[in-house]
Image (cartoon, rainbow over all chains, first blue to last red; front, side, top):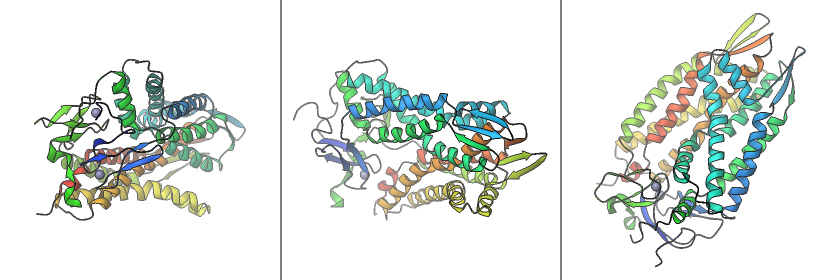
Length: 218
Length: 206
Ligand SMILES: [Zn+2]
Ligand SMILES: [Zn+2]
């Protein structure tokens, strides 16, 4: 047995996240998942495309996300008055009109949390891919893990669509560049998350910092 | 077959929740993960009590979320206040049943089903039930994945209020149900995060 094993290469002792079953998991081919022997949950996946694919995707997400946030999502014309606003602009109006807590509830999961996740992933993936050994990659990856459930761009996108239908009664709507790029950002974000395997990222970070796997023989 | 499978806990091993590393616990109940630095423990701390506390709070907030108005619309001097269900009925009366269905599912059914699902799993663990463990695990995971979609109507109100307030003739203001609704979503997420699905598998035939 070699001293360092990666889950993609060889069997490793694994604890199921859902049911605590201890198991040795054999090598998993790219594009396949390892499934828990007891509860059938996915233990990890070995995504095709290694680290290049999520890196390329997350850079694309970053660009789309920035464009989506600085351009209006729609132009409204209500009785001759033309309005156009960005997502953050809408939240800001909400904030000023006396509901700062609701503005935060809308803005945090749609803009700030996804923004932090995207920026954090860019940083960590860059560091791993080009072996740059940038500082704070580990705490950033822990932070991303904690933030993931609170990122809700996909729900927000459905929210935009529903508001458009509702507003169609009150106003003439022209869909803006912000909306189209937001759609692309949501799709690419989902693809990024699907192409990532946290266990593999952690193994790469561990290899970079030169530590050996603490635990080899079960 | 099932008898061969052991829990990591029986071997003094715990899986790190953050990075997945299998960690030897060396008689400690809680240690720092050697790989990612996060806290590693066999089971989440005081899981059942904390999950119940969040869940009961969510159940309480679910009532004003549905009975209070979600949105006040003022147009040409007329103000109307709509609860979630009135919003659904509005879409139905306009023949927009797909949208009515989406909002009804996300805002009314989903939070309720999520709370019932978590309560069911909690009760079954407390009663020491050994049946249908895989189904309960899947139910818990489903509740985890779908929960966030209940934020839909809050986002809709937020967007509409933010967009339309700019115009002078019509204003849209959020109602008290918004905060209650957000509380339901956040509290059920806390309840689901507090619960440890491994407890389902800790129950054994006596
Ligand atoms: Zn399992
Ligand atoms: Zn860890």
